[in-house]
Length: 358
Image (cartoon, rainbow, N blue to C red; front, side):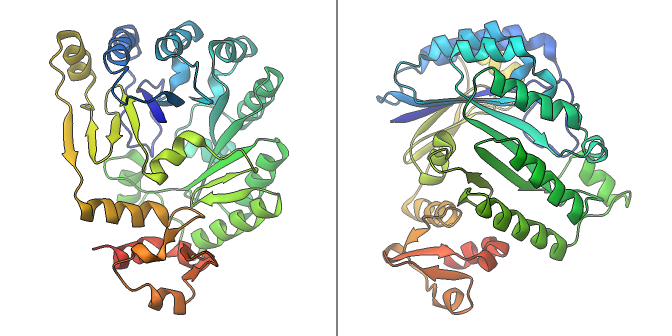
């Protein structure tokens, strides 16, 4: 079973923390979509397996009109797909648009809320406000969406623990099935990183960030959510099927500029350049970079991805000694012989992973 990721790089406005490939050249949407459709058709049989999950991400997919979303989904085909996810900015939600994309085949929404605090949304450059976020979820529910995820961010500049706790409670009150959460990372080249380097804003200290994460984990699990991956929480049965492919190491295809594909043991990716992508698809000269993962690469990725999930890793595959981390309470053994990270271990997971890699 395969997954398909569709990258829509267009944004009406770039968020100040984002380092994903995106562009505000909205006038290029039509040409880009035509190239996407051509790539989808050309790679239709690449996996030799049916497409079970589709994820339309970005960028901001909701910058495309509903008719275009329908064309993309129709080109892919959903006859055997169980999950069709689309990312959305709350500012793009209207009852008509939500009804139209649901009719087009989208059965799961991922809404980028990030915060319910207007001052924080402005600080990180989001183009929606808190009321629009609340309205977007309500409208989606009224349109019949029964599988929704929202994104929240913590460790934002000036963000207090009280604000974070309030955001979690508002998220829970919405009745969504999935919550993805991300601590702010100051990525090189972003506006927020520049402001931090200039001393215009200060990062949240590590102790506060860890306390925010611990409160998040405890509160969502108390509310019945399963903490199935470091950053992801779902009500039972609503774990993201598509994203789980990335963590399980199963195959997926990525179409669009900058999109990655994985057909074990080969990983490939399209150029993250709009003109190079469109021209390359049109002329049949697209240069897709490739790498073949070695046994060591596959082992290291298995460690890195496995320890991010609640299922952990099979202890028998370990080439390094996990005992020091187990003794220190950062890892634990399960009854079925797997190694998983403890709550304390999640705070230093990167260091643990490095210790266990070859």
